[in-house]
Length: 191
Figure 1 (cartoon, rainbow, N blue to C red):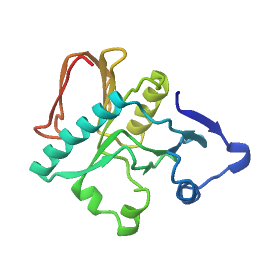
Figure 2 (cartoon, rainbow, N blue to C red):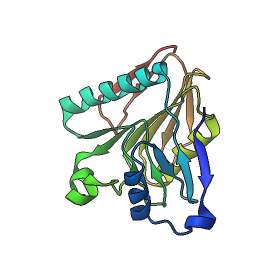
Figure 3 (cartoon, helix red, strand yellow):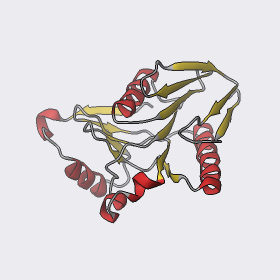
Figure 4 (cartoon, rainbow, N blue to C red):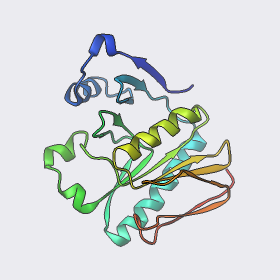
């Protein structure tokens, strides 16, 4: 099952970030995102293999971050209030510590009004590629510095960077955190 997009624009035209937050809080059992166009996106659960891979990527990122202390790591349950109007949940995310500490406690507690510096999106069996690519572009447009779209079905990783063309590398791959995540290396094996 793929994510379902509901265009609620005629009903909720002008739905604010705060209203979206309240909608999520009264429907805590439903994972939702909101596109900048006002589409409500109901996220389907992932299978065991995708969940295992996602957890491993978060663990690797978290271990690197514990050693460096450079930022804050987030799971796929975190919704970020992006500056372009969307509310998105990457599979794994990282924000530089000084940017995170620049938010108020209330902003940190609710859906943080910040675009992550780094994200990982893992294409599960239920995901279509094009919406994920559009989501990655949305992150870039919101200030993302580095992003990886891992596509096990295509055996590729798409690397997104500010002001650069998307780079596509084949599995197996060793990905570098570059200047955004200094010293972070992630190995992607054949799925």
